[in-house]
Image 1 (cartoon, rainbow, N blue to C red):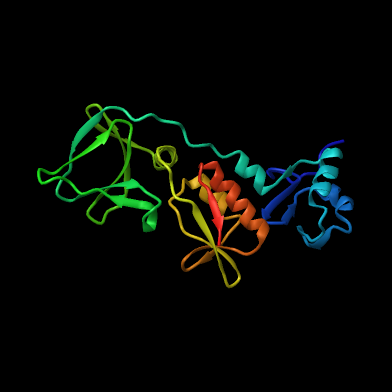
Image 2 (image 1 turned 180 degrees about the vertical axis):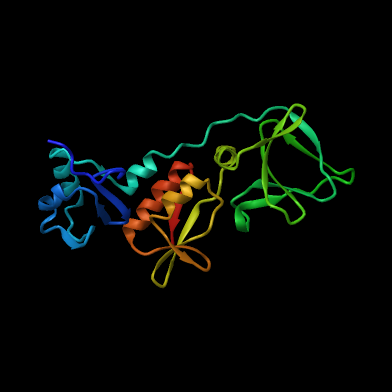
Length: 227
């Protein structure tokens, strides 16, 4: 029998927010009875039988796509061993920074020497700004540097962190607050399925959202503490 999945949909049953799903295949509707609340093509899971429901859907041949599946598909940071130290000349309007999760915003500025140089190992990822212009990302090489696409640079920079600090999920009104971090765009897209915007970062409104955020940050080899 031909699938009744909506053309172009990534799955028959797609999680778009924690425990909120889009129904892309009406044939699975009978399996959902008694498990939550349906409004149009959206289904909010309210029962405690989440894993059982997903297993029953799989047993009947339906394809599900959960937020955890999206996280599992994200690339992990590469393991890059630093190379030889190189002296890099910094122009008068150039601002170089290294990823450092100990400082607000996640980037620590480098102060050039009196001769206008910094010393960095080969393969190190550096963020560069010219004045107030947009950021670009560089990889230090034996002859200077080469530009690197932003997502590749950010992922590599996470792999270069040494003993990064734990990321705190701080209890606030309405949930837990996750500080804003510089993330590759594919990580941001998945995180947007989990969090809500907040003036001080990202808001996680329930325990399951916290669990998913931790799973995503663990993918970047970060530890998380809840306060």
